[in-house]
Length: 119
Image (cartoon, rainbow, N blue to C red; front, side, top):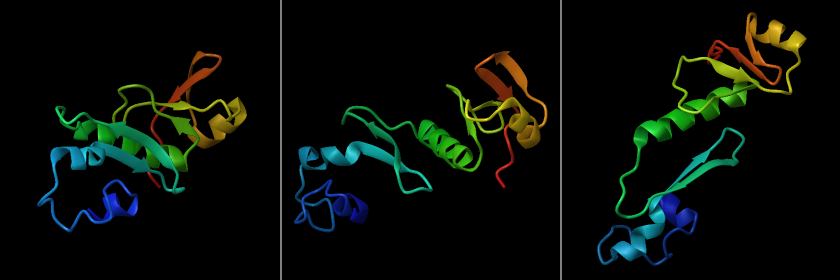
């Protein structure tokens, strides 16, 4: 509730509990924001009131944001923790070998490697 008020997602006078608020008052809190280590918003998901949140996807995004903040990699669609990642185009082939060791070139612009360690 404090974060929702801080980001002005609820009216300032909304109170400390949900008492007295209608579902329409709470509708904006149906959004999920993932903020990266650099304090920038990386993802916004807005769910309709009739749809539950997919927490597996939210956790997958958080894992990806943390990993890609530390390493010059990207995660493909449906990626899961421990699966191969994509080396970003900003990394030369020489630097890719130094950083990741072996990697697979699928296409000139698509190189895959094992997921780097979190450290």
